[in-house]
Length: 368
Image (cartoon, rainbow, N blue to C red; front, side):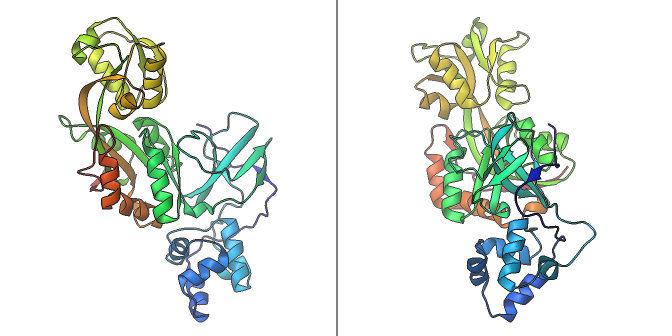
């Protein structure tokens, strides 16, 4: 995917240094303000203030300007100068498909990135602005450092994003991607978190193996859930075994290569090539079968039951969220960990069809 940092913008452009946060803490303490006081005056979250003071986050240009205005000083006086300036203008996480594109903005690894709006069902949040022929028009964007970006094929990710925003005050953006594609985006520092579900009860270490194959970094895996993956069939198809279905000549809705669902289908068919079409996402597989242009497809139970389809389980998979170890102290990630470990979320997730939340929130550390 092409990355382009050369974008014209109508916003104010300021070059700032990579901050240590010490000046922010010192100036706040001198005024006897709490972090919440400063957050309210600057129009940002208290968690963002804490992260900036601790050196875990580099503020966006808008946030740096807001903090400097509160302290009645320049950005340079607040953060100092360094050899590596913070990028004044954001770049695209990936190239937009059209000349006029709505976008969201987020900060990742001290870079501000723009994300073309997609998957509105998973991301019912207003866009931050519009790009038209390379010129940006921003409205009232959320601060880039308060946005968590996840690449994941979990069909219940929209529910996770809603609860995350409600409990943390941060914003979550979800981009539907298969496991391999999600890990590649994480490797390129274009998302904070990547979801994958190659591990099964029979091969519990597959997620670790896939991370080691794609990422050359110290990582963590956070268990989201276990779930049932299998074959979705039309409601009138009463086949009783996945093996018998795999032997039939059917039109399949298949996920893209590199996804765990496609891996499962290839194992079911053996040496035979599937007949049908490729689609993106578990919900798209179920919709293809429901609408009748496919006779079968591999997806998770949740999507099959939501579409009113017959479902034949094939295997139980373990869905993990992968992130770089250097990101583990970021307030956005810590808020996600707290949510997954909360009793209310574990109960809610465990009630979704095919989901198992008994290990939700468990952390696995390893080096690749």
